[in-house]
Image (cartoon, rainbow, N blue to C red):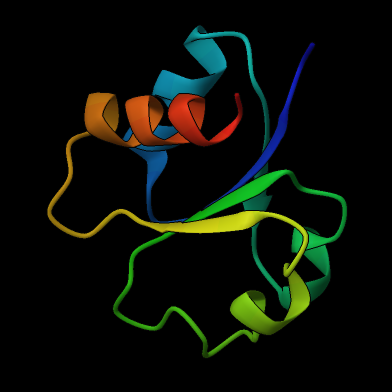
Length: 81
């Protein structure tokens, strides 16, 4: 089953890594982009500036600060099970 994952625009390495693993990746440019996502990946520096944590209560929010793209992929996959 393909998961829809929202990833903050600045995290291009994470976008690429998740797409390579077959996930449906949506770049988060504004709050409404998070609608319908199973999970969102944000930098953590401004994790609620766009209101994503409020908007995406049905999915989990992963803060990517300090993590490699592979580590983010592992976190996404562990939360999707």
